Image 1: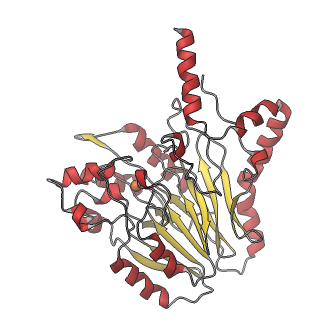
Image 2: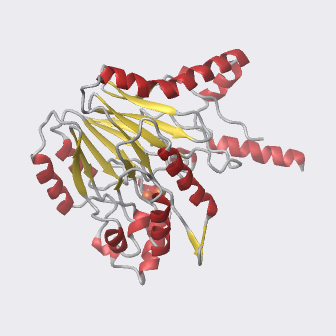
Length: 381
Ligand SMILES: [Fe+2]
Ligand SMILES: [Fe+2]
């Protein structure tokens, strides 16, 4: 029995371990170098905020910080009962945001507040979010949308797409989880439509899109913005194509990218993928936000296809199923010279910092980008 269990555990490791180089790293690392690296990591996790303050100087009005919480998937069971684990994730992020120093100028909620778009779930999420001491900017996710096509969200929260300016940066919020009318209208009930969009690997799902109406609005909105103004776009799905079978995909992403092409500094921040993921396409840096509920594995670990994770990504270690907050978290973001510096706050893993490298022309993980410095895989048995 013992041997059988050990084999099963080994199988689990193999299934999720996507980078064999980490195994080599683990063997080579002594206790001393591990401690040294831990200390460096701890320092790195706290230093850059301060460094950004100094490099921007007192007078630079663009120096600001905001927080990003996403993908809480609050799940209604019955009556006043909700899945406790997911509640705990969102509550933890809200509490930590309230303790942030310096205070964030605002907090972004990145979508998938609810699991099945129910009013109970959205109300419950709003109640937890109301404990935040900061203004909130909202982005809608497909789990919030496909029961009533965003009706309750608009009643309780507001518009599905909009823009705003903050300290010299132009922000655009998109509703990127729209899809084809033929798919929307083919279901017997709203519940059936919602549950078919809610699954990760559903062959009956439909790819996301922003849609021509919204792209037209975006063109108009950006026509008033100068080329030199930093632009930050926030959407729920990634505005590029990663992996269609899981709907890590926005069908008309290229059209959105074309509208953003004229700007010198563009960052797209998105949720939906529940993992660390970043990429550079042309002039646009893309960065994924963490989920507070659960992590998704990287596509290659599930379907035996070529790895479709973007090249710049340093994968997270697989999640430890015995730690309910593992591979989940939230982000603190600075605008560093008009580019986003992203501090991933990872609850059960070491924090990670992504920063745009001016020489290279894309964002890099400040500590782990080079294969030699990657964190070895976790062992769970
Ligand atoms: Fe999600
Ligand atoms: Fe989503």
